[in-house]
Image 1 (cartoon, rainbow, N blue to C red):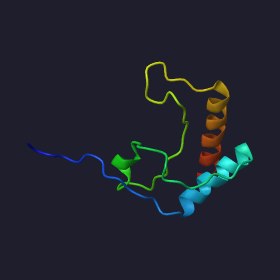
Image 2: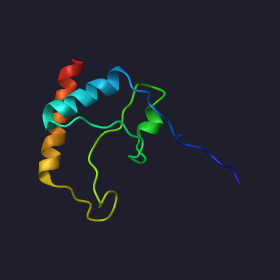
Image 3: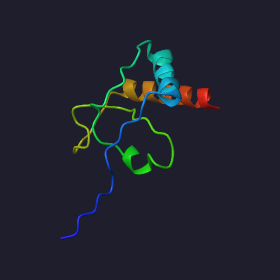
Image 4: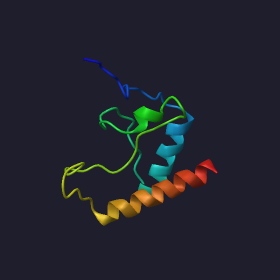
Length: 90
């Protein structure tokens, strides 16, 4: 049996990128996010050695299930946060 590890666990230390994203989140939502490692697995594990990463996005009870759903208001807010992140980067 050959074992192949395709995506190792990682931890991004707080820094400029996490501060930028946190600032964008707070700007849009009025809430300061908590830095946490409880979010689960993401595709960031596959690119973390190529570029800085933070994990951020929608969460919900139906994540990755048939009939996955989130409130439209959450998608609207997420879109605004991503736009704010891009504005701050560029």
